[in-house]
Amino acid sequence: MQAVALRNSSGRHLTGKMPNQAANEASVRHDWQRVWTEGDASAVEEFYAPNVRQDGQPRTRADFSGGMPRWRSRFPETKVEVHRLFSSEGGRVVVSRVNFKAAHLGDFKNLPQRASTPR
Image (tube, rainbow, N blue to C red; front, side, top):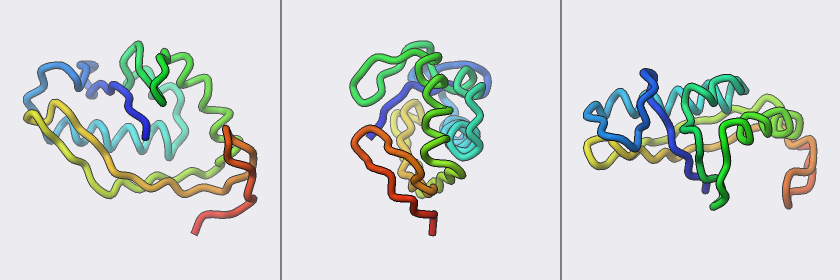
């Protein structure tokens, strides 16, 4: 599981005081689409806080967007399906449940290449 701090479309951090639950949920859904499905590394600047934690480690936006080409080369044509968004604290915190679908064409961390295609 990966936790990152996201911002909404007006640039305000979702972890700040945000009264609009629907807007925050839409922003999280949009992040999954632009960053992960479309592979738009420039969208990291729009959605992610300057300093985030990924897999428990501190990362910057540059770290995150710099890893996108590596991810896309190993998992081309990534498609992310958002199944559900869970909000609390009036929409200030949004958690998502998603499935990734992609061809697995290169070793990634401890996952060996499978040369499989999405179903």
